[in-house]
Length: 160
Image 1 (spheres, one colour):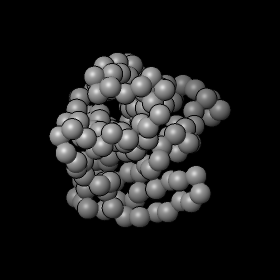
Image 2 (cartoon, rainbow, N blue to C red; image 1 turned 45 degrees about the horizontal axis):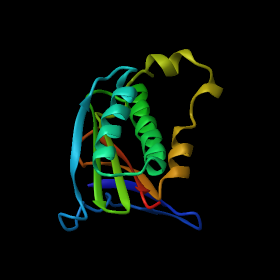
Image 3 (tube, rainbow, N blue to C red; image 1 turned 90 degrees about the vertical axis):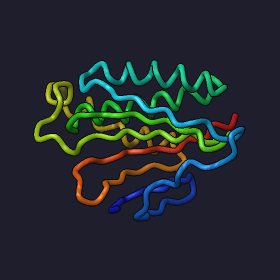
């Protein structure tokens, strides 16, 4: 598998070529991952936020931890709908009590921008990756060898 992963910490940045670590832990520490197929249209980010909100509430996540997580979900899904081919899937995993892992997988770059991106000015888009980098403890993208599909992911701290 070929991957480019950017691990971001307040003090340093490092680029590595691996996918994020798999979900591990005891049953009490880890929540079973949840996966949703999303519509490839503008409403997908709202659908993803609602589904993620219900799941995160069920996992007992505080509202303070949920707000940045839902923003990252929204940014990743919006980028997939606007810049990539369908299908789009969202996966949430809680590998331990203090971490949330978010993945959005698409079918690779689209030949044309989505309707929102194509209709707005340069100053109205392009901030999603910056937002994700500011909120995530680590983030990146990987593409399985032999495919065009890509998975953009972010890990967030859920500790209060």
